[in-house]
Image 1 (cartoon, rainbow, N blue to C red):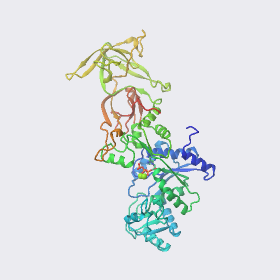
Image 2: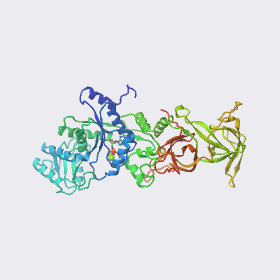
Image 3: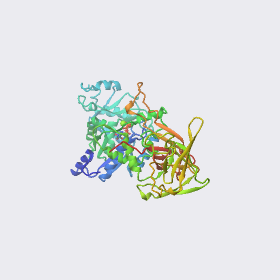
Image 4: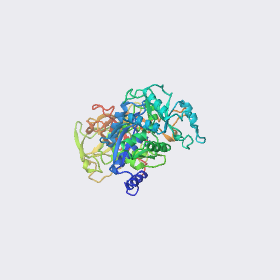
Length: 550
Ligand code: ATP
Ligand code: MG
Ligand code: MG
């Protein structure tokens, strides 16, 4: 990172440290355990974790599990796993907001005693009506002037379970005429006779987010509470809560713009719908941008980190091109992975002058740009598979691959010259015939003869049959994200399954998440869900070509 371009959050932190507002910073990532994390969350995680690292501070992992309706413990495990995979280490600092329920209750009592909170009997609808609008001030609740004693009594009875859901709430007493609607006596506690995954039936009153969140931050010693822009209007309330509760080192809320990506679906709600409608194969479907999906597709933590860094941190909402994420994974993998040969759409190539039954091994470098990856040996024999598109009966101009009479290089092997082909009844080419030049072993001819085309291949007798899955974006924004009926306009070609692919035998034993460059075809990763040792399945992470320029 360039020293000059500190983002606005770093600038705030540096100023706070310089002025001695805090001795040590503390950030946190506070997900609600109500779904899987996605690329947007990755930005928040890496931002918060990165700042703690940069300023030798502390990073807290906190489940914001104060809402008993939507939370499930299955998500707690997946979220932890995703954050660990991204490399954000919370050390001993794992917290659950629901562990603070008692403390939050005490905080509410404190507000009541200070005359800063009251129990209100208006219904949810009445509260909304009394709240006013942007142009009209709100009206005070008729219950606003209850005495401290009455409020204490009612609130304790709310806690004791005496009142049904929705019959009473606790509200902060702030200002019904405030231009900020969030400050018009917001609800801070509600009655909900509900089971909570962590606290069971211990509570039948639950705190609202705007009251709970600043308390969570304050009790953990969080200094910089980073959230997304939609909370900007809630900041005065955040500050009001920490001030009225008299925390000695009040945390400060800082907002940044959410990360949006083009042509993909972000947002838990939308992903959930695709999963529920069966449009995708679960939360980790490789076409999604949940962390689990990106991992399954073959993205690496390093590539996501690079992506998030390139996106930067800003105060203005914008969408980032999905192609930038692809650029990042190519950058990460290109020097790290072996370039192997895999034929996705095979056609048989027979070398008629190669001795039948003979096999030889040819040496191939694993990565031309990174010698440290060494080399490997690949079997070669009389019958090979090549890509169907690498042969044409009648080639167009500038086609340099196989066609009758043309000579090409078999990568890492020999020159071969096409001598003929066979077709089935339907006119489909089934076999291509050629002869090879034994003197061109390794891919060059001693007489200095040049060929323009180089094609890849696998030995038919040795190759491993595998399945490959190719992906396109789930949504094509140019064609419109939504259909007329409001449903999502899903790209019908978002998944192509190729069942009849062949890879070189060196890939036997490839395990979940192993990835390779398949020459000319892209980067591929062993699918963690469907691949079996005897029936490998590969996901295309990304193709090799890109129009994306940084
Ligand atoms: P979603 O809207 O996708 O359901 P959320 O905001 O409800 O996400 P939470 O679990 O409440 O998800 O959020 C955890 C943290 O992740 C919050 O601090 C939130 O601001 C941040 N976050 C969520 N989405 C994004 C995003 N697209 N870009 C950056 N940060 C995000
Ligand atoms: Mg949420
Ligand atoms: Mg949210």
